[in-house]
Amino acid sequence: MLCLARGLAEPAPEVVLHARFVTEEGLKVSDLRADEIKIYDGGRELEIVSLTGPAAPFHVGLLLDVSPSTESRIDEIRRSTQAFFYALREDEEGLIITFDSEIYLD
View 1 (cartoon, rainbow, N blue to C red):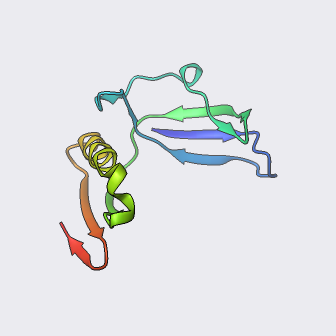
View 2: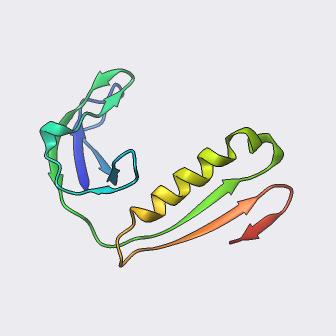
View 3: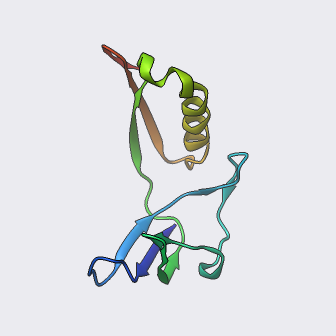
């Protein structure tokens, strides 16, 4: 979905946000209305000016830190990554690159 919002704390005529909405279980949500979405900047709610359906497909790469410093959150990183890729449309592609002291192409 493409969301156009106004009311940022810093002066800007409008802001375009590309967003994917999923449930807590990672299921896609595609039939939202603007009045069902809240966007905040610095605690202030922004006005949603328009909301449109899916844009052109995109290809995305995720760079994930799997170094020992993230060990306590690795399960959360895995779940979030899986949910993100599950939310992609069939015509979209993704790539995962992980790193610790070296870089790995997964």
